[in-house]
Length: 487
Image 1 (cartoon, rainbow, N blue to C red):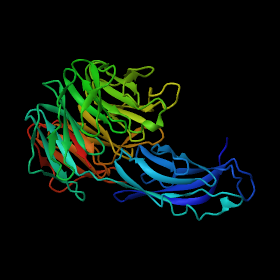
Image 2: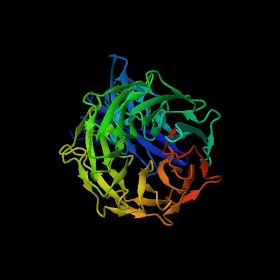
Image 3: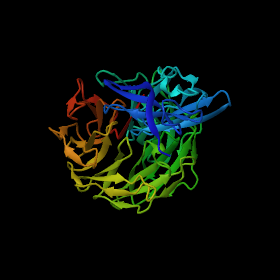
């Protein structure tokens, strides 16, 4: 049935990310009514959530619950990132209460509903009256990154820092570093409650609770838990509560669900899952609501020059290889990154100094399958070891370990192609090995393994050009290998 979009009631939804704000319109529309000036009692009302500006948007995973006090029933409307969404309220004369059921996870945001209750118009002519819901609003604020965690296997520790929101500069916590058994990779789940670290020598994963006020780490009960041999990376699916670990020596991926109350890890059905040869990195899509089949997981197989693709069951987390997987890459893919809208996948190919770029099949025919974008592969520096996409899918940055530089690119939003940023590559410390972008996409953090430091850059929001912040580089423990930020 076609929807006749009649903006009878308009409400402002606003989301802010640093200096970026997004206005979204909530439109009360109707279908099934007559074409005259009024609506029939059978009219069905919707909230139509549509982006109204291209300067950022609501993050992935926002879900609104619409409760009807008259009947005691409710429905949930999930808003995929970057897409409009119709949220059914009900027919005329129906009371409702709208609340946020799930907060956005990428980027992490805090949303509230103002003037959240009311009754839909009823009777002839009700559709011309905009007074009932005109002041309804959903307001979202992007949470700034507050803490940084750097894993160092050589020193058996995790260094922790507070982040200055204005300058991006990290300052070591008084209790830092925290003891950890050979952590080679670390990731923080979107709410900032837990950090997950994989330990190379002991083939295990450790979970730490994060003190919301101080950023201090405390090992959770039952941690660490066993994973495969040679764990090299961990990725968190915060929207669904799953963690995935790439096991380099076992050619597999271990999957876990994590308890949001205590951080405890439980192996997923069918785990571990077969990967290619020498999997070095793993990443997941951020917006599972976009896919009827569930979120996608991608693994960089350094030894077989491929990327494995999986669809993960959104309820159980178990993974199934997608049609055509694995897909060929350049030589020695060492790192994989997905844009925040789940449209493109990028891999840094360490052995041939290139970036492989793919578009994600979002149809029901081959969900999660990859197709090379025009112009791929793209040139990088010597031995690119890590890759990251900023939160608004504007820029890609690659750490070149041999050149001691970071290459920067703008993303063609239509094709996914990459174009070098003016002034790229940008100098780093010795041996840049991993990198990340803060939640507001204002700063880039690069871990320099041979220099025992972090280089921090401000990101020009228009061009992507990097500028070293005052005080950079900042000291870490010996041979840092991984970094993750927390709100």
